[in-house]
Amino acid sequence: MRRWRMPFAGGLLVAGLGAFLAVQSLDKADKWASVLGLFVGLAGLVLTAVGAIGARRRAGGQSVTDAAIGGGVAQVRGVRGSVRIGPGAPPSAVPPPPAASSPSPAPASPPGDGDGGQSLTRSSTAGPVRQVDDVSGDVEVDR
Image (cartoon, rainbow, N blue to C red; front, side, top):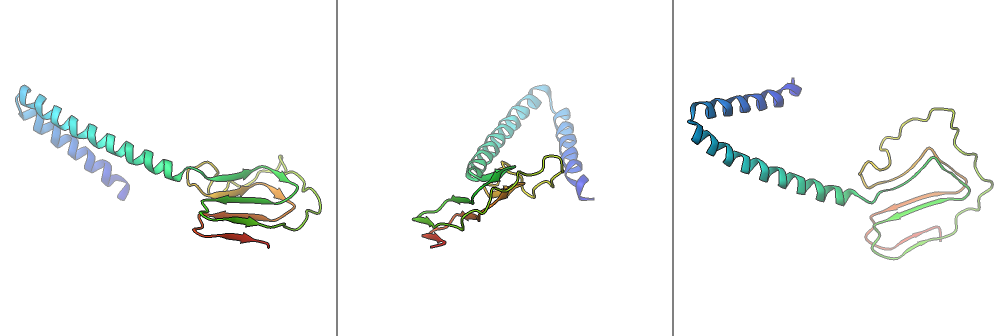
């Protein structure tokens, strides 16, 4: 029921505007259309700017996809202090690469989707996976 409300309301708005302009003289209808076009253009410009600013803020995500890593993975982002990640456990062996023939499930949030998060998808590691994001102070892991 909700899916058709917005298109229906938009259709009524366009029909009402068309009826209003139809009863006006050609000169008045042209002037009204110019003024309405100005406001629609300004609204589009504002929405474009807001979208561009939002996309820029979300940019900068980190992802590792379809990889076989012989050690560990450390992803650090947005830390405004010193970061110290100590030695992890030494890798026992290089993990086998992900099987290419078996279908792998799609990640809940695929890399590059603009969310700015961190992800490790369809990968195998022999060491630890450390993901640190947006910490306002110092970070130390495995001293």
